[in-house]
Image 1 (tube, rainbow, N blue to C red):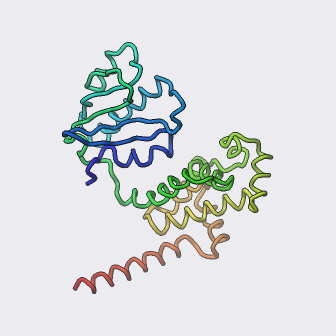
Image 2 (image 1 turned 30 degrees about the vertical axis):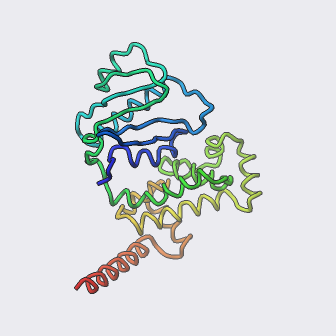
Length: 257
């Protein structure tokens, strides 16, 4: 179990969904989660700050299935009226130069009952890669891929929709992609193929569900596309991976015996 269960993973990957960093510190039997903005020149809206503070406590309660209460909550501008917020948080809100939620170490180290480690292991490598990409100049192709990764389960695959998400015109997006020596359809195909192989080799998700996650209307469409990409079928890839896993397991058993 992570030493700081309720804050460790959210803190690591928060920057992927918001321009916010969660900094976690532990001292004197208390664990404090501080919210800082990636662009420190900006002054975030009071409503956004309060929502994030409430979310920290809500996440702790949802994940642990316990009535976790904050020990202390601080922010630069207190909301009004204050009573409903303090009633929800279980602690007084105080004015401070920092946006922080503090928990007891006992609450902070409660196990996450919602945790699904096999599923997390399947998705974490991609999350780590996307986190690393934040620190590097992103090409247009990479930005398109990032939007596709979020939008494929909702069938967000039309180039016009991707352009809108990236706040540019369809023509501008096409021009920039072509300048990088690729095409939108090629990026879409590569993204789908990489994800398909990942799901088939790293998870036990049914093929029908994988088809949905890749933005296909039906499993048959996914089968045809996958065969066109790879000259093989999803079932054969999964069976081959299962054979590798069984062989590796047999080797481990021999080495242990």
